[in-house]
Length: 231
Image (tube, rainbow, N blue to C red):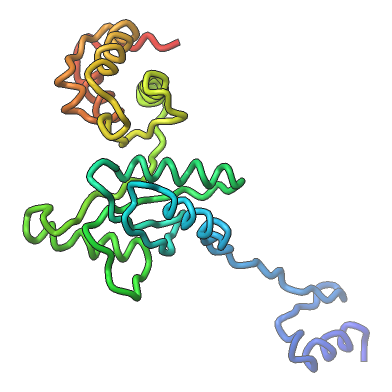
């Protein structure tokens, strides 16, 4: 029996080597491509930090932390003076202070669902359904407050300017101007800066109607005279 025949017999006789091949007298093992790792779930540490921050927040009456696909999902019952955006940013600050990068998403509700709660995505869909079918928000459904970074260009520039006027570390593309703490005085100063940079006048009513950085950027893009002078 030749050396090649002996190698072939060796491979055939061992169950764990039957998928191997013999090339030029050399046994070659197939390359095993590892399956992609699943997206990491929020750590227990992140959950503990969020639960403590929620317990310490004066505007949070009740809360529940649930698994979320890309961060930490939180359901909250708020008092009349608090907003989901405010809670979201407070939670993020607490996570950053603890050295954690998890991004919180907050869904305000009138009352917490009965356990078992499920995932944040399932609960968001479940809470939103009654409002959609009834055509009103009386069921307590509300839009999820989730941070979305502004896109490059005018959105990023407007977000940076608005964050500066509000004294905030960041402003998301879909964050509401009023919920961020904006008022008429901030609106006038911000719009003056926007007019100087883009040579497009916008009114205070337009700002409050647009509501978000993305909405303002779309207003600018829709104006024929819009010509960004961003450095």
